[in-house]
Length: 530
Image (tube, rainbow, N blue to C red):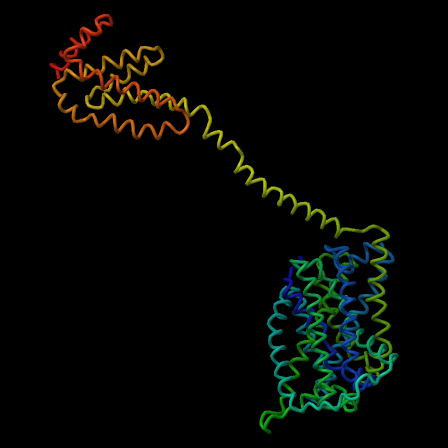
């Protein structure tokens, strides 16, 4: 059978409805018979002590988070003793499922359809349980989500409608019960309410997606389920009275029969019965599904679905012979069931924890360590990323000396800026090759007279704004890091601007040695050609 996963919210709802179960029908009568008007006090103590059991079950589940309760038995106790304890636990779950079928048949025959045999109710209810077991725990969890709002709505309507008939004198005097009967009744209440919660370990750690939130859901479901039972017991005592509550077989159903608003809204107890059928359905399925899965683990069979139909038929047969009458059922629930359930739920869980610590079985801690290590590694990786983003390599790239090299190269555009007017693009190529020797200073001067003798000088005189524009945009771009472009930009420009004013008359006599004359003679030729 494929592993199925449920959410923590679904697990909380299952825990809530499972803890109520048949307790909503049989607990008010049994606990009121022993404690009378203080029955709600015993129920409150039982819910508070049940939280300790929940802590015990959660600790046991964390020892082997990837295994069910039966698999944990075989791993901790070993092959032989683990198999024996597992079979004893499965006998508890299977017999409890059969007993719940008996309660369904007895309730329906006694209160609703007295002429219908209990076997028919058992068969119809078993069909639903078997079909849900074939579909698996995921589908069952979704059905529990759908049934939970219906349950809570009916319960709230039930409290509102019965509240006008409350009589406070029925719970007086308070704390009249002695300590011994109070403790015995509290343990009896816990045997029906909280002892069976260990069955949830069949899928609690291994089939829940978020374990931490499911642990909180375990506590929340137990508290809310216990609160529902406390309210039912208190309302039964306040409305019916402690004597009538202890006599009734199903006090909560008798309580619903008392609802009457304006002699119009009454006889709605059959609607209230839906609430009890929902809670019994949840607990019966958990018992039966745990038996099927556990038997597959004991026999080491991967797919345990072939056991569903045979076990369902055996459950129907056992339900017919479990209790011959209601008196035998009450004696069993008060005298035999508390001891029987305590052995295979509480004592077995404590033994498993002790043996697991002796044998140093700490799978949960190892997984938590590995998960914490992985989380720490993720946490360490995350702060490293901003370090990599803020490492000083980026300023190195911004302040590397390679940029000034790139800035020395654009010094040539000063020479390229002058030949913007002619179409001769070959002239800037020559200075690029001659930039390595120190000649470009000499080349910068002849290039100016090339442009000055041209008849286009009046046009060029209108364009002296170009060097101004070149100095202003180039300086802010080239001056952020080096100061050299400032020195190169200031001295060279006045040379070019000072010489073009006197080249017409004094350029030839001032520089006769540098043979600029032939070049100047060539310039008019080029201008004539142009």
